[in-house]
Amino acid sequence: MSTEEIYRNNPLHGTSLEQVVTELVEHYGFEILHAYLNIGCFKNKPSIASSVKFLKNTTWAREKVEAFYMYKLKNLPKPDDQEYDKPPRDRIVPLTDKPRAPRELSLDDAARVKYNKQKANAARAIRQKRSTDYNPWGV
Image 1 (tube, rainbow, N blue to C red):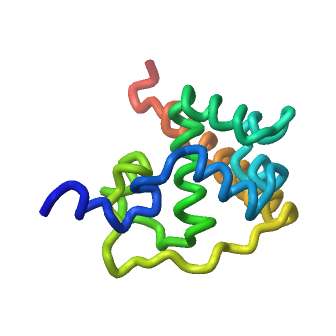
Image 2 (image 1 turned 180 degrees about the vertical axis):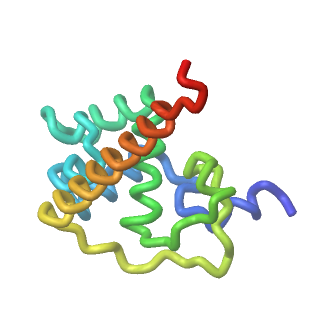
């Protein structure tokens, strides 16, 4: 099986970054993209050209946008742990997983998601602090 066949079911295969950003902006708009992704290029004087330029030079942001494209706009099922560790363009999407209708997103929902992430991060920080504070030898 060739590499072409392995990645054929990935919606990012053969799709340029500009096409991805254009589809996302046409469907959701810059305001929703900024609310969910918290990337400045979608808030400060947003345009497709400037967003693409920023994303081409910023790997973490590009991967975040590509994952959003795959799992919100194309509404694919979340990948398993092994595939999740790979960048979105390198993920193998099983042939049984087909794109579905885009998810309906709102600014209210984005605020709820952001709050839940902050709460989870705070709880994680507390757990980490407790685990590093424990010193059985009293040193």
